[in-house]
Image (cartoon, rainbow, N blue to C red; front, side):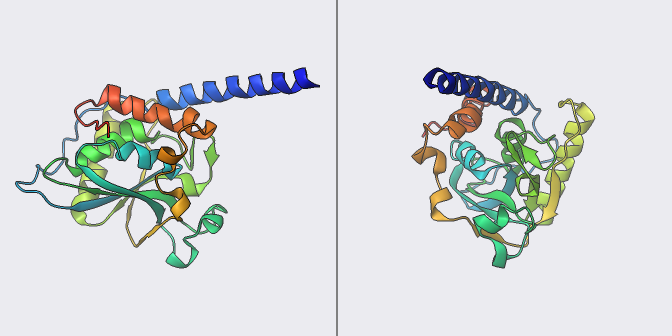
Length: 223
């Protein structure tokens, strides 16, 4: 019986490792800079971007390692604030997507460069209503724009990448107006930093940070 459980555990680890490798490869594509973007600001400031790309644990962790980013919070966007709770969002019936709100200094990094990180290493923008092992509309890929400038940059970059065929499949990322962003429960914040050895994190999320370091060293912040 002991050998049986050991064999099952080994099979599970092999399958998980293969999934992680596939996820890492799919979400580690070299991309061009956005042709449409805003120039860096002449002075320090504070702006926000809201993006959704699967489970917010990994997306949050990636952007916490991006230069010019000052804060990242996990939360919910796309649905009513009344249903912005993990148990309800998990049903896939609230309209929400697990999202992150990124606060950044526009004199250090542009909105377009944030999208380059988002599309290249934070998730796979060609997966519809899923990311890796997670399925459902709450794991969809989405840009939630706060103004016309963000909308214009997001749409233009998607068109640019699709024309260049940098991915094997078309990008399915939705560009939607941000109605509200509701922060997730406290136990979801900084989840990777607090649970670095959890198998889900090891297999699905740590490779994203490593891809950021390797592919975009100029944007990588080790702290």
